[in-house]
Image 1 (cartoon, one colour):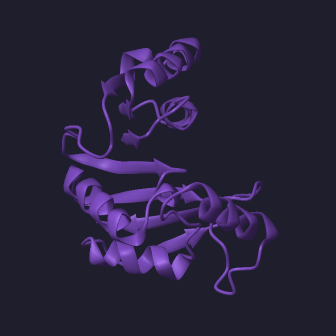
Image 2 (cartoon, rainbow, N blue to C red):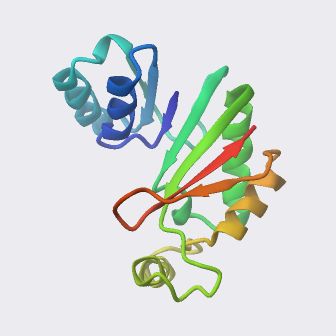
Length: 167
């Protein structure tokens, strides 16, 4: 699994703990990966946890991944850049792989649920073109990038949604 903008690394660590056969490649800036490494070591999964310093915008991502995990990332970018990024992530997947995206995803009315709708306002005020995209917008962007039809999964708690998209 390739963990894009891995940050603290806890999502990848959780996958590694749940799946003893999983190998995680965490991509992020070098200083950020120091935190991810500490968390992987603390969780006892460092033997299956690779650090790949760099930016998701231009780093060598590698290839042949079963899963590309993208958490709290797309909302920083406009739709054109989201498609460009999704194309890069698609190229890193092996046939039959999938991209798993965790984001604030407002409903089509863009005013509910309140947490996702409020987050869209934050992106409007704090980024040049970012947004909290609806499921239909994600599905359209990902299809343009070469993916198949997405589906949405609602976690049992929290304000995020998970968009699962086959290569």
